[in-house]
Image 1: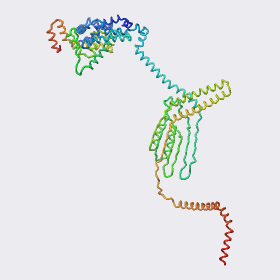
Image 2 (image 1 turned 180 degrees about the horizontal axis):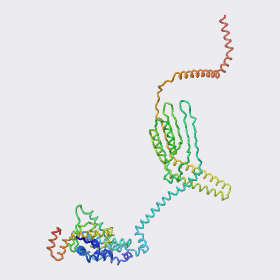
Image 3 (image 1 turned 135 degrees about the vertical axis):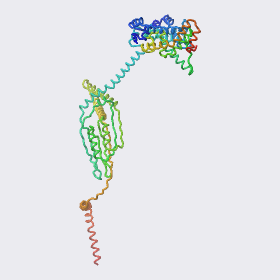
Image 4 (image 1 turned 30 degrees about the horizontal axis):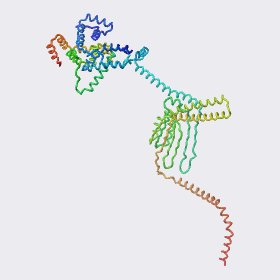
Length: 188
Length: 408
C-alpha cells in the first residue's frame, strides 16, 4: 500500500489481485446479487485509490480495506432499507457455489445476534484476527472473543441437523438430505 | 460427584484453536488439552462449525481489473512520496492530520481564553495601584450641617435640610470593585406610608448607622391638617443595599419600590486608560520643558499644553473618584409619608385659660390701638398741622361774620 501511495501501479495491481476475491466474498455473503457485490468491490478499490494520498499505515492493509468495505456495506444497507417497500424483506444472498450449503448456513447465521454474526463472519470468512475485528467493530478484544465464543456455540447447535445434511450431501444421499431438511422445517 | 476444574476456560480453548492466545497461555492450553478428555471433546465442535462455514464460497466473476478501477487509477496518479518520513513520524506522535488539526485548534482555543482572561485581569491591577495612590492623597470629607431659614409663619413648620457627608472613608477602592466583578452603580427608590412617623424616622437613622450608611440629603415637612413627609437620599455600601432595603421596608407600608443598576465597568476602564495616557503626556511635556531649549514662544506653548493636560487629569481624577464612590455606595431614595388622621378637639379650654386669653387679647387690643393712634398721628400729624395753619385765619374770619349776623 505504501508503495502504491508512492506511485507504484504494480503495487496496486498486486493489492487488487490479493484482495479482490476476499472483498467480493465479503459483500456477496452479506448482500443479494452478484452484480451489486461486484460493484461494491470495485467501489472499495476506487475509494482506496482516491484516498491513497491520505493513507496512514496505522493498521494492516487488510483492516484498512475491510473498514472501507464495512462503510460501503452500511451505506448500501441503509439505501436498501430506504428503497424497499415496508414489510418487504430483501432476498437472501445465495452464492452460486454450493447453493444448498449457502442457504442452510445463511439460515443458521440469521438466528444469531447482528453483532455476534458479524464477528463470526469476519473471523470465519474473512479470517481476521481478534484484534482486527475489535478494531473494525470498535469493541474491546475480550468482548470480541466472548461474542465469538457465544456465536460459535449457538451456531453449532443451529447447524447440528445441517451437519447431518451436509454429510449426507457429501455422501450423495439426496433422499436423506431432503428428509432431514424437511424435518428441520427448512424451506428449500 | 467430583467437579473437574479446568485451568483453561472454553473461550481460551477456542482462542487457542484460533491461534489467538499468548505463548504462555497457549502452552498451558496445549498441555491441558493433551490430558483433558472433556476439553478434547469440545474441539471437534469448533472445528466442525468452521468447516461447515467454509463450504459457503463466493468466487468473483472475473480476475481482470475492471475499467472503472483502471480509469480511477489513471486519474489518481498519486504523487510519489507525498508523505515524507518526517511527516510520517510526526503523525505517529500526534496522530493523523485531522487529529493534528484538532490538537492545534484546542491549543489555539486555550491560548485565546488565557489571553482574554489576561486582558480582563490586567487593567484591574493597574486600577489597584492608581486607586491606592489616589486614596492616600485624597482629602477627607467633613460633616456639614446646614439648617435652612425657611418660613416660620403661616402655620408651616421650619423645613430642615441636612447635608451630611460620609464620616468614613470609602469602604472599597475602585480596584476592589473591578476585581470583584463588574462595576454597577446601584440605586433604589422606596415609598412608604407609616402611622408612626417619628418612630420611623428614628428607626431610619438607626438602620443607616447599622449598615454604615449616611444621609446624602433629607427633607422633612408638612402642614397643619395634613400628614408629614420625609424625603431622604441615603447612601449605603453597595453590598448592604439589599439588607438596608429589607429593614427600611419594615418601617411602614410599601407603596412603591424600584431598583436599577448601571454597569460602568467599561467606562471606568476607559477612564483609567485615558487618565494613564494623559499622565504620560504630562510626563513627556515636563521632560520636554526640562531638557530642551528653544524659543520663548515655544516654551510658553508647551507650558500652556502642560496646563491643559493637568486640567484634564484633574477632571478625570474627579470623575473617576465620583464613579468609584457611586459604585461603592448605592443610593436609596426613600420617601416616608405619615398616615395622617385629623384629631377632633373634644375638650374645651378652661375658664382661667379663656380669661387669661381675654385679658391678653384686651391688652393686645389696647396696645394695638395706642400704637395705631401713634402711628396715625405720626403719619398724618404734619399734614394736619399744615392744613390747620393754612385754614385757621379763613375759618376765624368766617366764624366772626356768622356770629355778627346772628347778633344783628
